[in-house]
Every structure is written in C-alpha cells, then in structure tokens.
Length: 130
View 1 (tube, helix red, strand yellow):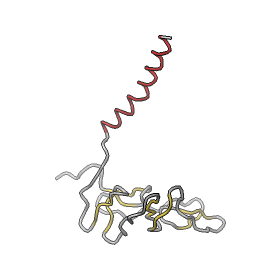
View 2: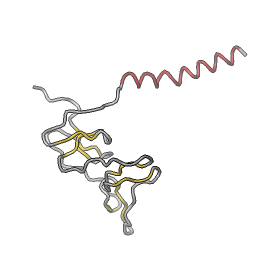
View 3: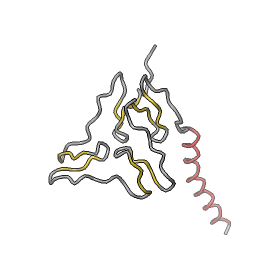
View 4: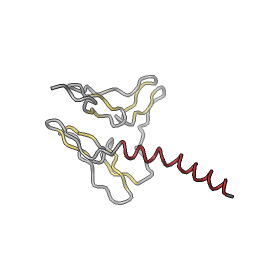
C-alpha cells in the first residue's frame, strides 16, 4: 500500500512541477507599448492599427470573431467560404487560396514580424539598440 501511495505522489509531482515552472517563468502579457496610431486589443492580446475594428462586447455565451467582426455562439467557428475546387479557405484572411499557397504575410514595418495566427504584425522580439 505504501509503495502505491509513493508512486502516485511521484507521478503527481512529475505532472505538476512543469506546470508550476511555466506559470512562474512566463507570466501573461496584459498590455503593450503600441506604436503611433495603434491601440491595444486585450481580447486578441496584440496592438491593432487605428483603422482596425474594435472587439465587440459579446453577450455571455458568445465570442468575437475578428475575421467577420461579429459575435458567434460558443462552439461555432468562423464560417468558411464556398471555395472552388483546387482552393482552400484561409480563415485568418477569410479568403480562398489556391492549393499549395499558404497564408500571405502582411508588409510589417521597422523590424516588426508577421504573426500568422492573429494575421497581424508583432513588435520585434529584441528591442533595438539605442
């Protein structure tokens, strides 16, 4: 009985130690220093250009779909376009693309990089020397 208990405790420790380490080492980002003409979108956790639509205040049980700029019920994903044969739907840009052509990066400026998950430009990972 004692050996089974020791094994369970050691397995639980092996599972919880990495989770605790990641939680302590990498805190969540809650804001950022956005560039001129940009605003912080706390829902998407990124800076958005001035012309980008703000996140909608969706009712309980709904989430904001930034691609369509609409509120959707939980569990309902973005609605794919009816793409022709030989094309696939790119949900980040909400367009049909030819097979074999991946998502197209944005023209990011001044060392910023394109994040294909959010389809937005992100600040440089290493701050410029200055």
